[in-house]
Length: 59
Image (tube, rainbow, N blue to C red; front, side):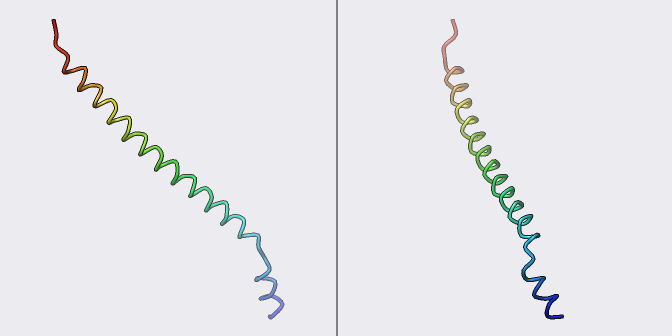
């Protein structure tokens, strides 16, 4: 029984899958945050641009 427990503690095959999962999660969070920030900035930019164009006098 102790050999089985010792072998279980030394087995690191599942650790690699967990590490890859954590890396993928961090990358996904970074993409979501970056896209959200970019979308907000672009929305503000185009909103300001539309307001500026809309304020121009027509002939």
